[in-house]
Image (cartoon, rainbow, N blue to C red; front, side, top):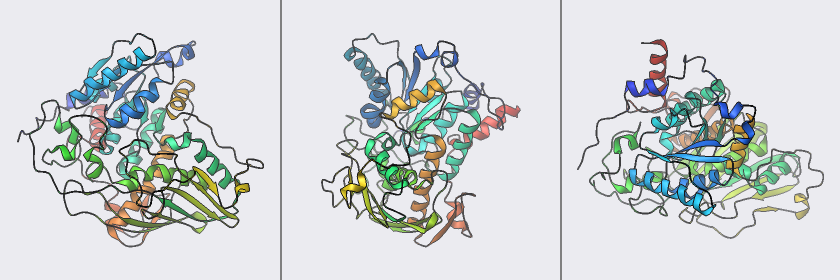
Length: 471
């Protein structure tokens, strides 16, 4: 088996990456001139795409391109085949639009993209375990970011990234695109307007991912920088089952089934539904008080994310939230005066798993159709018709997008503490202000994870501080 090359992410690389930053405690506001110039609204934003796999091709690249007023000028992936295919896709989008494509550079190292002074913003569509490091590097280099959900893979990473975004005043849109779907906004407005009276409980249904026996080691493809792909995760032998298909983009990639890179559907789709829950309950800057859960975790080492599970959370006002794979995929809010149901009209891609009891359900429904009447709705939430377009709007106006970093971190944290409860199988008490469990050090130890040097958000920040202070 071919061994991965030595890491190429060196202190010298890092010095280039953070040359625009000053100190670890006070990040500068770096805004490209074309964004804040007098004629900025008429100028095109230059975008770098980091990650060129399934979700980038089906969602992020087309979504960003179609917003108008932008040019995708760089594509990057640790798999050079995917970088090449990403460039070809972008060029095809320009041809389809009847426009000449700008020069599009290909990169295999994300640092080359985030340090480019001619790029205004980046879209990050990579595996979950790499989100924090890449987004942190981007905001420290003055880039606005569209970041695929979940926000991060640990709570400690989320705090680090959230705080960096606040200090740098970057515009970060988390890919919680349900906020840009009408039925979810309407459901949240109805619930927050008291249409079903006081909310007593909520049911959230999510699908689960399958597992299968471990495939044996395989030679590392010449086109894949496997060491960079692993990033902060522990070293593990290469097999296509662990990473992504070497041919095609329709198949669900293996990393979505492995806990080193993803926590499973509790964060995969949970980050969407928990976000809708927080939006509806008006707890976007807070979280649950108590959590208890159980889950089935496979014993094999490659596809080992959770299977069947059941989680109960207690939110402010003692609202009971039950999350289970046994419920239909969506959210059902129960109040004193009835219930409101909301779901997607379909899956994101044809390869997404479905609930065991999946059936055709209306995107928005209620115990009484009159509960859905728009008349008398007192709470009006921000409106967005396309998630990437809302991000571009926010970049241009320097205003908050519909799913900003702080909100994305809180909804993702609720997912992660649910996963921790599933792992431990005992009741946990969560302090949403301190963002720690009360009197449970084992649970608190799971709010972070070791990082394989030199990768990871915390290692990146250590190198940033060393660079800033010249040590």
